[in-house]
Length: 79
View (cartoon, rainbow, N blue to C red):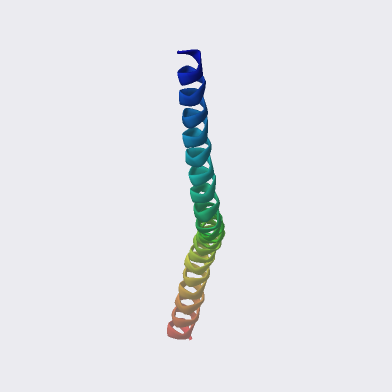
């Protein structure tokens, strides 16, 4: 009876070690794509910040350009 329990425990231990090895292998296989995806997300976030800044600068630049055009057109009409 005790010997049977020992054998069962050894089989269970072997099965659990095999499962653990499979899980570790799967984890290793998935770690690299996850890291690549995280790096891509970081890069896209940096690009988004730059995009928002560029968009604001463009809006200010366009407003300035219109003011210059208005001033030139207004002054040429007066002359």
